[in-house]
Amino acid sequence: MVENVSLNSDQFLGTPLSKIPCNGELSADVYVKIGDKFIKFKEKGDVIPEEKYNYFISMNVKELFVAKEELSAFDEFVEAQKQAEIDSVVAEVGEENRDMVVQQAEIKETVYEVFMDEELSSETVDILKEQVQSFIEIIKDKNPSADIFAKISSINNTIAEHSMNVANLSLLFGMATGQTHQLVLENLYMGALFHDYGKAKIPAAIMDKPKSVAYTKAITEHPQAGVEMLKKNPQINKQVLSIVAEHHEQYAGVGFPKGMTRDAIYGLTKIVSIANIFDNVCMENRRDKAKMYKTAIKVLEYDKGKQFDPELLPRILDAVKLGFGNYQRERAIKTAE
Image (tube, rainbow, N blue to C red; front, side, top):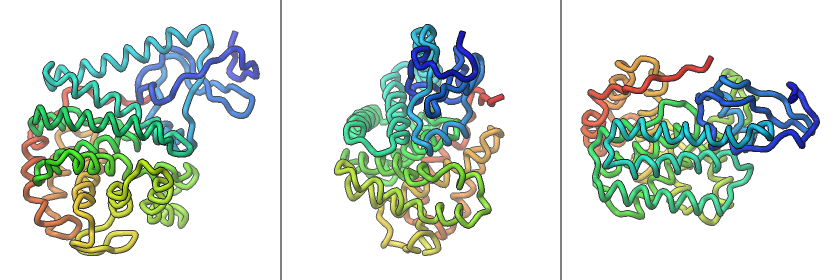
């Protein structure tokens, strides 16, 4: 029998954390490995909530452990959950968009892997770039209505799924403002996926103390910290690095870390910045479905050229009002016990 704490490594096998859905019910007890010990983390029937996923990302935890005799059934259950989530989204967006939904699921899994790596793997980045290329080709071919982007967005507030939301919003906003070139849209999407990479690597001990000097310093420095980590990988191009470096700059020059203004800010960064704020406001209000998108739209409407480029904003507002203004999510938000 497997106890709450075990030193017997022969009892356990690892399973990738990136495949275990956030807030999804577990079909077996799961363990974390600390040194030589396997310590029970969650019991069968529990869920792994968002804050734990963010903690694991900050600690570069890539796998959890399951009793050897339960791993096969556990992996089958996780795969069934993934397929059920795909089917749930397809029910909203239509069977004709299944390939888009499946590709999103694959990207999400890879994004989790990327964020959980201690150092960015060129092999994983290659996989992600190929998945992004395919997804954008699907989007360009289908030219889906704006509301489709609302229906494929995540309601889990992990840093990885926030990055997915920002990437999808950036793609919508980019096309709404006239960006059509495949490579431009790929750079836009990749930059959005990686915009908070530096924040993801801030230690949990600092993130847990939002009133501390260390927290303020880490948040202010996270764009450049992300660039310093990402630029070590030759697969990350300068356009993506610019988006990561500048995503908290503001049109009026009061952003950070450099206080850049107007046309000094890279054009694609301006799009990602709007998408980032929009999703942040949605996540802050996600327990009130009637308020979530309405509040985010108001934040954009009331900006008046402070944070965002006033030449881009009207077309982006048209897109969000069309896609999100009257949309209410049917799927229930699962709350971790």
